[in-house]
Image (cartoon, rainbow, N blue to C red; front, side):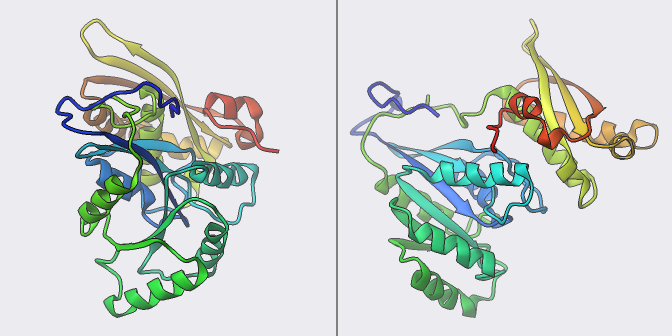
Length: 312
Protein backbone atom coordinates (compact mmCIF):
# COMPACT_ATOMS: atom_id res chain seq x y z
CA UNK A 1 0.00 0.00 0.00
CA UNK A 2 1.42 3.44 -0.87
CA UNK A 3 2.16 5.68 2.07
CA UNK A 4 3.48 8.86 0.41
CA UNK A 5 0.75 11.45 0.91
CA UNK A 6 2.67 14.33 -0.66
CA UNK A 7 1.04 13.56 -4.00
CA UNK A 8 -2.14 11.69 -4.75
CA UNK A 9 -5.47 11.60 -6.52
CA UNK A 10 -8.72 13.50 -6.21
CA UNK A 11 -12.27 12.62 -7.25
CA UNK A 12 -13.41 14.13 -10.52
CA UNK A 13 -16.31 15.79 -8.71
CA UNK A 14 -14.15 17.23 -5.91
CA UNK A 15 -15.88 20.23 -4.35
CA UNK A 16 -13.91 20.53 -1.12
CA UNK A 17 -11.14 18.96 0.94
CA UNK A 18 -10.64 15.26 0.44
CA UNK A 19 -10.03 12.71 3.17
CA UNK A 20 -8.06 9.47 3.12
CA UNK A 21 -7.22 7.01 5.84
CA UNK A 22 -6.33 3.43 6.72
CA UNK A 23 -8.94 1.26 8.45
CA UNK A 24 -7.69 -2.09 9.75
CA UNK A 25 -10.15 -4.91 10.41
CA UNK A 26 -9.03 -7.25 13.21
CA UNK A 27 -10.97 -10.23 14.51
CA UNK A 28 -11.02 -13.92 15.23
CA UNK A 29 -11.32 -16.36 12.31
CA UNK A 30 -14.74 -16.33 10.63
CA UNK A 31 -15.85 -13.08 12.25
CA UNK A 32 -16.82 -11.78 8.81
CA UNK A 33 -13.95 -9.36 8.12
CA UNK A 34 -13.64 -10.13 4.41
CA UNK A 35 -17.40 -9.99 3.91
CA UNK A 36 -17.47 -6.60 5.61
CA UNK A 37 -14.63 -5.30 3.41
CA UNK A 38 -16.59 -6.37 0.33
CA UNK A 39 -19.75 -4.71 1.66
CA UNK A 40 -17.94 -1.43 2.36
CA UNK A 41 -16.24 -1.42 -1.06
CA UNK A 42 -19.52 -2.33 -2.76
CA UNK A 43 -17.91 -5.10 -4.80
CA UNK A 44 -16.11 -8.34 -4.09
CA UNK A 45 -12.38 -7.77 -3.58
CA UNK A 46 -11.67 -10.29 -0.79
CA UNK A 47 -12.33 -14.02 -0.96
CA UNK A 48 -14.78 -15.54 1.50
CA UNK A 49 -15.85 -19.01 2.55
CA UNK A 50 -17.67 -20.59 5.51
CA UNK A 51 -14.36 -22.15 6.65
CA UNK A 52 -12.19 -20.36 9.19
CA UNK A 53 -8.78 -18.88 8.30
CA UNK A 54 -9.61 -18.40 4.62
CA UNK A 55 -7.62 -15.15 4.51
CA UNK A 56 -3.83 -15.66 4.61
CA UNK A 57 -2.35 -12.36 3.47
CA UNK A 58 -3.27 -8.72 3.96
CA UNK A 59 -5.32 -7.17 1.20
CA UNK A 60 -6.52 -3.58 1.00
CA UNK A 61 -9.96 -2.80 -0.37
CA UNK A 62 -10.53 0.78 -1.53
CA UNK A 63 -13.93 2.28 -0.65
CA UNK A 64 -15.28 5.71 -1.55
CA UNK A 65 -17.73 7.69 0.58
CA UNK A 66 -18.28 11.24 -0.61
CA UNK A 67 -14.94 13.04 -0.53
CA UNK A 68 -13.31 10.31 1.57
CA UNK A 69 -11.27 7.33 0.43
CA UNK A 70 -11.12 4.46 2.91
CA UNK A 71 -8.23 1.99 2.67
CA UNK A 72 -9.69 -1.13 4.26
CA UNK A 73 -7.02 -3.58 5.38
CA UNK A 74 -8.50 -7.09 5.45
CA UNK A 75 -6.32 -9.14 7.79
CA UNK A 76 -6.13 -12.86 8.55
CA UNK A 77 -8.06 -13.96 11.61
CA UNK A 78 -6.12 -13.83 14.88
CA UNK A 79 -5.87 -17.22 16.58
CA UNK A 80 -3.38 -19.34 18.53
CA UNK A 81 -0.79 -20.35 15.91
CA UNK A 82 0.69 -23.84 15.70
CA UNK A 83 2.51 -23.97 12.35
CA UNK A 84 4.94 -21.50 10.81
CA UNK A 85 2.20 -20.55 8.34
CA UNK A 86 -0.17 -19.86 11.25
CA UNK A 87 2.41 -17.58 12.87
CA UNK A 88 2.82 -15.68 9.62
CA UNK A 89 -0.93 -15.17 9.32
CA UNK A 90 -1.20 -13.80 12.87
CA UNK A 91 1.84 -11.56 12.33
CA UNK A 92 0.25 -10.29 9.12
CA UNK A 93 -2.90 -9.40 11.03
CA UNK A 94 -1.16 -7.33 13.71
CA UNK A 95 1.09 -5.61 11.16
CA UNK A 96 -2.04 -4.60 9.28
CA UNK A 97 -3.27 -2.72 12.35
CA UNK A 98 -0.03 -0.79 12.87
CA UNK A 99 -0.50 2.98 12.52
CA UNK A 100 -4.05 2.62 11.18
CA UNK A 101 -6.27 5.68 11.51
CA UNK A 102 -9.00 3.43 12.88
CA UNK A 103 -8.88 -0.19 14.04
CA UNK A 104 -12.17 -2.06 13.76
CA UNK A 105 -12.49 -4.95 16.19
CA UNK A 106 -14.90 -7.31 14.41
CA UNK A 107 -16.84 -9.63 16.72
CA UNK A 108 -19.20 -12.39 15.62
CA UNK A 109 -22.22 -11.41 17.71
CA UNK A 110 -23.86 -14.80 17.20
CA UNK A 111 -20.87 -16.64 18.70
CA UNK A 112 -20.32 -14.05 21.42
CA UNK A 113 -17.12 -13.40 23.37
CA UNK A 114 -15.39 -16.76 23.32
CA UNK A 115 -12.03 -17.16 25.03
CA UNK A 116 -9.99 -16.35 21.92
CA UNK A 117 -12.12 -13.25 21.29
CA UNK A 118 -11.54 -11.98 24.83
CA UNK A 119 -7.79 -12.50 24.39
CA UNK A 120 -7.93 -10.57 21.13
CA UNK A 121 -9.79 -7.67 22.77
CA UNK A 122 -7.24 -7.61 25.58
CA UNK A 123 -4.47 -7.30 22.98
CA UNK A 124 -6.33 -4.55 21.13
CA UNK A 125 -6.72 -2.66 24.42
CA UNK A 126 -2.92 -2.29 24.55
CA UNK A 127 -2.66 -0.71 21.11
CA UNK A 128 -2.36 3.06 20.57
CA UNK A 129 -4.57 3.32 17.48
CA UNK A 130 -8.20 4.58 17.76
CA UNK A 131 -10.43 1.52 18.08
CA UNK A 132 -14.06 0.89 17.26
CA UNK A 133 -16.15 -2.14 18.13
CA UNK A 134 -18.18 -3.73 15.33
CA UNK A 135 -20.65 -6.46 16.26
CA UNK A 136 -21.22 -8.36 13.04
CA UNK A 137 -23.89 -10.91 12.04
CA UNK A 138 -26.59 -9.15 14.06
CA UNK A 139 -29.20 -10.50 11.63
CA UNK A 140 -28.69 -14.02 13.04
CA UNK A 141 -27.70 -13.14 16.61
CA UNK A 142 -29.80 -13.19 19.76
CA UNK A 143 -30.99 -9.55 19.80
CA UNK A 144 -31.46 -9.58 23.56
CA UNK A 145 -27.75 -10.32 24.08
CA UNK A 146 -26.26 -7.66 21.78
CA UNK A 147 -26.08 -4.91 24.41
CA UNK A 148 -24.70 -7.40 26.92
CA UNK A 149 -21.95 -8.46 24.50
CA UNK A 150 -21.11 -4.83 23.72
CA UNK A 151 -20.91 -3.93 27.41
CA UNK A 152 -18.63 -6.87 28.17
CA UNK A 153 -16.38 -5.96 25.23
CA UNK A 154 -16.10 -2.38 26.51
CA UNK A 155 -15.07 -3.66 29.94
CA UNK A 156 -12.17 -5.49 28.31
CA UNK A 157 -11.15 -2.75 25.86
CA UNK A 158 -12.81 0.67 25.97
CA UNK A 159 -13.88 1.58 22.44
CA UNK A 160 -14.45 5.03 20.94
CA UNK A 161 -17.46 3.88 18.90
CA UNK A 162 -19.72 0.84 18.66
CA UNK A 163 -21.61 -0.35 15.58
CA UNK A 164 -23.95 -3.27 15.04
CA UNK A 165 -23.99 -4.53 11.47
CA UNK A 166 -24.65 -7.45 9.21
CA UNK A 167 -22.01 -7.50 6.50
CA UNK A 168 -23.99 -10.16 4.68
CA UNK A 169 -27.36 -8.38 4.56
CA UNK A 170 -25.96 -4.84 4.61
CA UNK A 171 -27.74 -3.76 7.78
CA UNK A 172 -25.83 -0.92 9.44
CA UNK A 173 -23.01 -0.95 6.88
CA UNK A 174 -23.91 2.47 5.42
CA UNK A 175 -23.83 4.07 8.88
CA UNK A 176 -20.43 2.53 9.61
CA UNK A 177 -19.04 3.67 6.26
CA UNK A 178 -20.29 7.23 6.76
CA UNK A 179 -18.74 7.39 10.24
CA UNK A 180 -15.41 6.13 8.93
CA UNK A 181 -15.47 8.77 6.19
CA UNK A 182 -15.83 11.45 8.86
CA UNK A 183 -13.09 9.94 11.03
CA UNK A 184 -10.21 9.62 8.56
CA UNK A 185 -7.89 12.64 8.21
CA UNK A 186 -7.90 15.23 5.45
CA UNK A 187 -5.48 14.47 2.66
CA UNK A 188 -5.18 13.41 -0.99
CA UNK A 189 -6.48 10.06 -2.13
CA UNK A 190 -3.81 7.39 -2.55
CA UNK A 191 -5.57 5.44 -5.31
CA UNK A 192 -7.42 6.41 -8.50
CA UNK A 193 -11.18 6.71 -8.15
CA UNK A 194 -11.88 3.50 -10.08
CA UNK A 195 -9.37 1.25 -8.26
CA UNK A 196 -10.96 -1.19 -5.83
CA UNK A 197 -7.92 -2.93 -4.33
CA UNK A 198 -4.17 -2.65 -3.95
CA UNK A 199 -3.71 -6.30 -5.00
CA UNK A 200 -2.22 -6.94 -8.45
CA UNK A 201 -4.33 -8.91 -10.90
CA UNK A 202 -2.18 -12.04 -10.62
CA UNK A 203 -2.60 -12.10 -6.83
CA UNK A 204 -6.36 -11.70 -7.15
CA UNK A 205 -6.41 -14.53 -9.70
CA UNK A 206 -4.57 -16.85 -7.30
CA UNK A 207 -6.88 -15.86 -4.44
CA UNK A 208 -9.99 -16.63 -6.48
CA UNK A 209 -8.67 -20.11 -7.27
CA UNK A 210 -7.89 -20.62 -3.57
CA UNK A 211 -11.41 -19.51 -2.68
CA UNK A 212 -12.82 -22.34 -4.80
CA UNK A 213 -10.54 -24.84 -3.07
CA UNK A 214 -12.14 -23.79 0.21
CA UNK A 215 -15.65 -23.90 -1.22
CA UNK A 216 -15.41 -27.15 -3.17
CA UNK A 217 -13.09 -29.38 -1.14
CA UNK A 218 -13.51 -31.05 2.25
CA UNK A 219 -12.92 -29.52 5.64
CA UNK A 220 -9.16 -30.09 6.00
CA UNK A 221 -7.70 -30.32 2.49
CA UNK A 222 -7.85 -26.58 1.62
CA UNK A 223 -5.45 -25.81 4.49
CA UNK A 224 -2.87 -28.13 2.90
CA UNK A 225 -3.02 -26.27 -0.43
CA UNK A 226 -1.54 -23.10 -1.86
CA UNK A 227 -2.00 -21.35 -5.19
CA UNK A 228 0.74 -19.62 -7.17
CA UNK A 229 -0.07 -17.58 -10.29
CA UNK A 230 2.87 -18.40 -12.55
CA UNK A 231 1.85 -16.25 -15.51
CA UNK A 232 -0.64 -13.50 -16.22
CA UNK A 233 -0.40 -12.78 -19.94
CA UNK A 234 -2.17 -9.92 -21.69
CA UNK A 235 -3.58 -10.87 -25.10
CA UNK A 236 -4.09 -8.56 -28.09
CA UNK A 237 -7.89 -9.00 -27.97
CA UNK A 238 -8.03 -7.58 -24.43
CA UNK A 239 -8.39 -10.95 -22.71
CA UNK A 240 -5.79 -12.47 -20.40
CA UNK A 241 -4.31 -15.94 -20.00
CA UNK A 242 -3.79 -17.02 -16.39
CA UNK A 243 -1.57 -19.98 -15.55
CA UNK A 244 -1.91 -21.03 -11.91
CA UNK A 245 -0.30 -23.84 -9.96
CA UNK A 246 -2.08 -25.54 -7.07
CA UNK A 247 0.34 -26.98 -4.52
CA UNK A 248 -0.56 -29.98 -2.38
CA UNK A 249 1.52 -32.03 0.04
CA UNK A 250 0.70 -35.61 -1.03
CA UNK A 251 -0.26 -37.62 -4.13
CA UNK A 252 -3.56 -38.60 -2.52
CA UNK A 253 -4.45 -34.90 -2.15
CA UNK A 254 -3.68 -34.31 -5.81
CA UNK A 255 -6.14 -37.03 -6.75
CA UNK A 256 -8.88 -35.35 -4.71
CA UNK A 257 -8.23 -31.91 -6.22
CA UNK A 258 -8.21 -33.29 -9.77
CA UNK A 259 -11.24 -35.54 -9.15
CA UNK A 260 -12.58 -38.43 -11.18
CA UNK A 261 -11.66 -37.84 -14.83
CA UNK A 262 -10.69 -34.27 -13.96
CA UNK A 263 -14.20 -33.27 -12.91
CA UNK A 264 -13.22 -31.44 -9.70
CA UNK A 265 -10.39 -29.39 -11.17
CA UNK A 266 -12.68 -28.46 -14.06
CA UNK A 267 -15.36 -27.26 -11.66
CA UNK A 268 -12.81 -25.29 -9.62
CA UNK A 269 -11.42 -23.70 -12.78
CA UNK A 270 -14.80 -22.72 -14.19
CA UNK A 271 -15.96 -21.04 -10.98
CA UNK A 272 -12.61 -19.26 -10.47
CA UNK A 273 -12.60 -18.07 -14.09
CA UNK A 274 -16.07 -16.55 -13.74
CA UNK A 275 -14.94 -14.79 -10.56
CA UNK A 276 -11.90 -13.36 -12.35
CA UNK A 277 -13.99 -12.13 -15.25
CA UNK A 278 -16.44 -10.42 -12.90
CA UNK A 279 -13.65 -8.77 -10.91
CA UNK A 280 -11.36 -7.79 -13.77
CA UNK A 281 -14.01 -7.01 -16.37
CA UNK A 282 -12.41 -9.00 -19.16
CA UNK A 283 -12.38 -12.47 -20.67
CA UNK A 284 -10.04 -14.88 -18.87
CA UNK A 285 -8.41 -18.07 -20.16
CA UNK A 286 -7.52 -20.05 -17.04
CA UNK A 287 -5.06 -22.95 -17.01
CA UNK A 288 -4.69 -24.90 -13.76
CA UNK A 289 -2.32 -27.69 -12.85
CA UNK A 290 -1.71 -29.48 -9.56
CA UNK A 291 1.79 -30.15 -8.23
CA UNK A 292 2.76 -32.31 -5.29
CA UNK A 293 5.32 -30.51 -3.13
CA UNK A 294 5.79 -32.16 0.27
CA UNK A 295 6.35 -29.67 3.09
CA UNK A 296 5.59 -26.62 0.96
CA UNK A 297 4.40 -24.73 4.05
CA UNK A 298 7.96 -24.89 5.47
CA UNK A 299 9.70 -23.89 2.21
CA UNK A 300 11.05 -20.33 2.12
CA UNK A 301 11.05 -20.32 -1.71
CA UNK A 302 7.36 -21.21 -1.87
CA UNK A 303 6.56 -18.38 0.55
CA UNK A 304 8.44 -15.97 -1.70
CA UNK A 305 6.45 -17.14 -4.75
CA UNK A 306 3.21 -16.68 -2.80
CA UNK A 307 4.17 -13.11 -1.82
CA UNK A 308 4.36 -13.96 1.89
CA UNK A 309 6.98 -12.84 4.42
CA UNK A 310 9.02 -15.64 5.99
CA UNK A 311 8.80 -15.92 9.77
CA UNK A 312 11.22 -17.73 12.06
